[in-house]
Structures are given as C-alpha cells and as structure tokens.
Image (cartoon, rainbow over all chains, first blue to last red; front, side):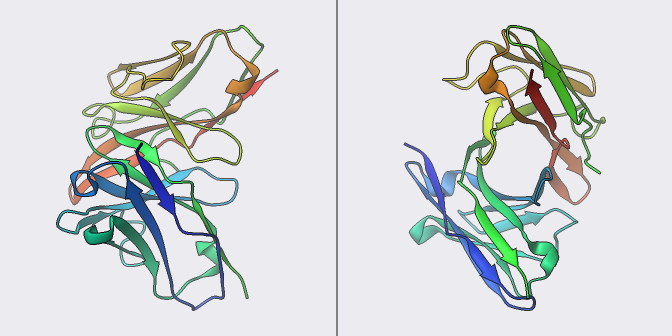
Length: 117
Length: 112
C-alpha cells in the first residue's frame, strides 16, 4: 500500500527555523517526484515546488523560490521542506504529494505549521 | 489569484447533477491534462479524476471529467450528501523556467 506519512504539527516563533518531513512507503521512492503544497487557513491549494528523489533535482514555484528549501534523503525514503526564518504568514497546512505519470495520486495527511509570537 | 479559474461555490439537491468549471490558458489546460481533487472537511485532498476523464479505482462512476480547449469541467451525477466538499482542478503549466503545477481556487460544493 502506497503511503506518504508526514511529521507532526509544529508551533514555532517568528524567526525560528523548521524542517518538516514526508516519508514514502509501499513504492519505489526514487521513481516518483514529491511535491509540496501549501494551504493557508480557509484558502486553496498552492504548489510550492517539487523534488526528484533519485538525484535531488528541484524546481520551485516563483512564489516560493528563495523562501523555502526542498530536499530528500533517498536512503530513508524521506522528503523535506524547510524554512530558515519563519514568518507569521507561513502559518498553514502543508501537504506532500506523489508525482509520477499521474500528478498527485497520493497525498500525505498534512502537517500544520503555526508561527506565532 | 489562482492560475486556473473555478467558481467559488456550487450547490445541488440530492440526486441532482452538478457541474464545476475550470478555465485556464494555452500554457496549462490547453497543452496538458487536467486532474480533479476532492477535499473533504479536515482531510487531505484526494485524486478524483486524472488525465481529463479517468477515474482512479474506487471512485464512483457518478464522477466524470471532460476537457475542451483551455477549459475543463467536473460533473457529479446522483448527488449525495457525502459529496459535500471542496473540489480543485489542477494542471501542469509550461512556464519558461520549468513546469509548474497550478491549481484552481477551489469550488465549495453544498448539498442542500
């Protein structure tokens, strides 16, 4: 069974750093890209960027380029999304999604990030 | 605002047929396939339709998709109360600095 399991909810202060994770199982992790998608409270889905775990090649949405970093460790089938300095406006639910021939065929359960002083 | 345009809301009574539209451009819907996702309250999005009109296994045939030119639509027939959810269309966009995955703003479906 294909599964993407994300790390738990986080509460952080502005200016702090954070890395959240997405662990794939039940399939060949290096055969599918992983995308990250943001959903701000009460809002729609926004694509942030994606990574090819086989070689860690990334491409980002212009809206998020330079604000976040996407990485992966294929040895443990895990992709990451990280911030070096969080802002209150980063408060959102973050989803990872598998991308192969069909984009977004499986999604993680989501990680809620709350940034508040 | 979102790259793909959807109506913010739609509604219908049980048993009715409803359609949700999704409008894009030549760089996304016009040249790539469209997927639809269903997001039930408090849950992650779930793939509902892929490649314009294909249903993943387990998705009832009450759900169907179509595409024409730079627009797509999702139809739900025999509406049920459990269909009350947010629906999103998505497609790849062929931008100059690499493909981008773009979404519609979402349509909140209410079953009256």
